[in-house]
Image (cartoon, helix red, strand yellow):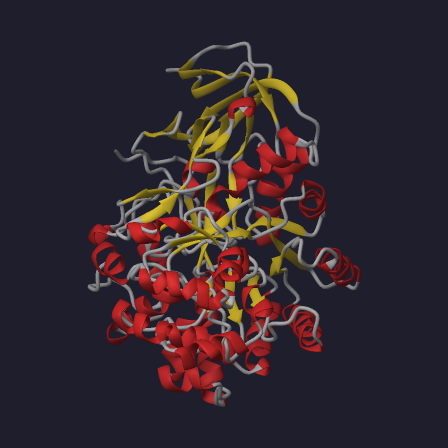
Length: 591
């Protein structure tokens, strides 16, 4: 019998904690790292020559929405292509449990507009004959399904509130009754008992940027402060757990309302006494000092004992969208209303001059801030099926508006309606492209890069490439980060912040979640625009970016990708918080 299942020889090892790199070998046995160092033996079932390659821990992504997609795509792509070996689901309060049978389709609907996951894909890919109703049953379900990555799950608060209070009351913004609060806390404790990692919550107010399918706010958007604080105290009483939170009820980041938003996050962190992952910290060219103020706030909070991490939006990316599938102007009531309904209904509303005046009257700079910049900066990329509109290809809406004597909103909508809402627009970059600014953000000890939104916004965004982008841009090409620091922030820090053990770094005895890659040839494919593939259930399509340069990706000691080609092995585990003794030692590969 061979000494090792896999032996990685002569690699440059970045172990993840920030310690300096070294040249060495890693022996893997029974899904775990058995030996690190200079290994004389070559006794292995598979020998990998990693000379000239980087050997590092797999990436940990704490902000994804693969709750549905994992059912038909065990590798959670595009994340799985980009070296991610562990993903968290249940983010922003969205998910599929707890749920009575009558609520199943409604929970799918919650994911359609806000996360842009096609309803028909969920119906076909997940089905409506669920084997779960409770949160523990949901976890058991996740345990059973094939997984090409490790899964961990927050308790999604929207289904929880609906389950206890009913849909209408939960969405009304009223406080829970004492009996309802008692039941909410009981179910949260029950979920934590079975290994859920805490909870995810979105609080975006009445005019939510991420609205429900019918344009109304989500239950958590209007949830009373005291109710959320009370649920946070459950984690304090348990002394465990982690919370992912978006708290931006006031759209203007320079207003006193934004100060109130941050003060509530501080109150919540004090109440729960557990780490809080605050979304979102971002460097924007429109507000060049904003990220510096955010970093100062994070440092101040942690100095006062409030363990608040910032989730950094760092990926160089733009939104490529059509008005058929666009929802990120939903913080504007007029835009929200105008983009509801069928394509025909949207076209009528978007052509209506009175509705347009309402859209123009609302503060566009706040509506578009952080979601690609001003409408004048949109570029027309394609006008499929309408050659008469080809004259607009490659032109900015602002320039078109000036030439034609129109407001930019009118110019955009005139072209969009004429093109039957299939005109493709490209926003400006959603973050700063200044590596100095973004590098300062990513190096900060209280920032966890990410917000891939993996599995969501599939028609216009591919944030799951953030890992590859960070390493190529900020490490290799500009030197704004060391490779050691990049892997610390992409693997070790998110794993430790979330409170799960033995992953996010390489050490003897730890599960072998390992990536082996060629730094010089690492890249996103395509690098700028996106590829369209029709690989979702019900014939649906999505935009993707693949990766090149990852030679081997391993999950629990089993190879899942070789040079970008999937092996069809599904060795992923369900990670249950504080149940480490129950985690299987032997990775199971299924063809």
